[in-house]
Length: 265
Ligand code: LHQ
Image 1 (cartoon, rainbow, N blue to C red):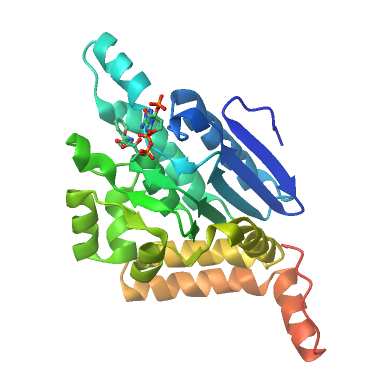
Image 2 (cartoon, helix red, strand yellow):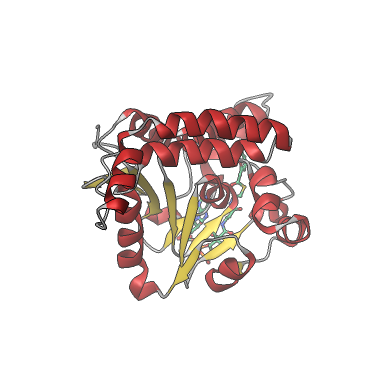
């Protein structure tokens, strides 16, 4: 696993890989390098069996402030005719890397998560927030629409009404409020944020990783297909889960009245 990134800090602790976006002077705004590096590391993690849970977080006082507007403004001014959608293709690759990774991806959000940084957090499988978190669908503040999958993830997490409200008014949603409306899984006091995230990720990393990958496929497919298709998929995925060593270990451990020791296979 490569660890010498320009805009990321990458640290492995057992089965947990923590990737920290590291442009704190700009509240971890995305420039091309950070976007490319984050995508690369997540795609690599997908193939690496030693990593069984990925945590994405931000250095300094924020998770991320969205697209780096300084570099982006400079490019729009000099690059001639330019379609933002061309640039968004790179973000879409990142979104797919997160969703397709066959293991849990957790966003650990403290401070601000604005614009496309907010939506990258929403693309993750679960979110832990510190109580100082500030989620901002900042796009309408600058006359844009939510991108990076926000238009897809937001209504699925919080419902249409809240999704429209967050997108149109672009007001901050605090960590506790985010927990109340289902935008995050858990919100904890800032003092407990690091230890809670670590314990949460370590628990996931010790889980039945193959089963988790199949769960991702089942749940994410369910929002796009009818019941019959979902039940058919359920059968296919359960056949695969049934074949895993972790399933056998889970049943054996239950019968022997001891905790299961999952290997991820
Ligand atoms: C920043 C940024 C930033 C550069 C803070 N860029 N420097 C859009 C366009 C095209 C294609 C792709 O998709 C997108 C998607 C998007 O993400 S659109 C949304 C982009 N993000 C924003 O509009 C948020 C802009 N930032 C803010 O509104 C505030 O900075 C927030 C609310 C995030 C944080 O406010 P504060 O806590 O008061 O911090 P600050 O404003 O003082 O920021 C600290 C520094 O970070 C400051 O630099 P300075 O040199 O003055 O200390 C900011 O300029 C810099 N920074 N966001 N996106």
